[in-house]
Amino acid sequence: MKLFDMKVKDFINELASSSPAPGGGSVSALAGANGCGLLCMVGSLSVTKKKFKSLDDKIQEVYHKKIELFQSNKEQFINFIDEDTEAFNQLMNAFRLPKENDEEIAYRQNEIDKATLSCIKVPLKVCALALESLREVEDLIKYSNKNTISDQGVAVLMLYSSIEGAAMNVIINLSGLDDDILKKNYQDIVEEILFETEKLKDKLLEEVKYLMN
Picture 1 (tube, one colour):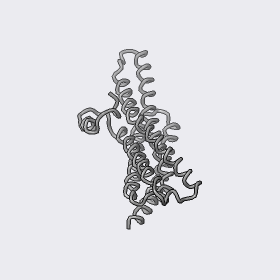
Picture 2 (cartoon, rainbow, N blue to C red):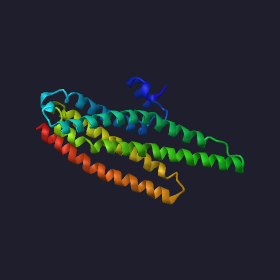
Picture 3 (cartoon, rainbow, N blue to C red):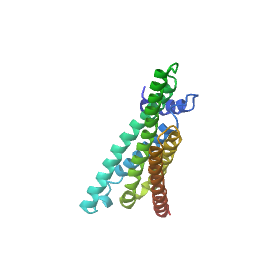
Picture 4 (cartoon, rainbow, N blue to C red):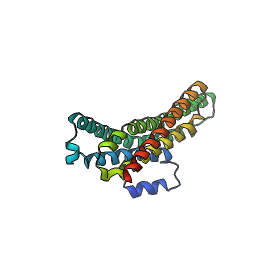
């Protein structure tokens, strides 16, 4: 059974088990899905209101497109929940391959290298998708139903957690790369994402808290 097909209780119990996967990477993807899901809810509770319908048509059109983006991103995050665990399982399987002769050793190392890259690329995609989503939140805060402001704040925190958690999963797997140039490239990408994320998160939460008072 796919992780995203599990009941919430079953998924949490699976997390709590002695199995190393699903772990932090899948939870980071789930956090992104939750953040986008909340923003979709915010949109649904806003577009039917008279105040929203009185806005300029262009503003309404852009707003609807943002909600469509959050819907699409939510589905991608859902897929990443399983992709992250599958990447980890592939890495574990590669480490279990026999290494009795030179041919087996070379094949095993090649499979480990491929699986390690997957364990980097999947959470990096989660980081990028969550940051893309976070960049689109500000206009929602401006034009959404004010009764959903706390939900918007939680969505920001979910997307922030998604990025931070996925970034940790990228960084911890960089040690498995032998290519120092590639390792530095991934490290730089993650640092740029985290830098922008921190500024965005602070700005958005400041706006949310202002509107809550």
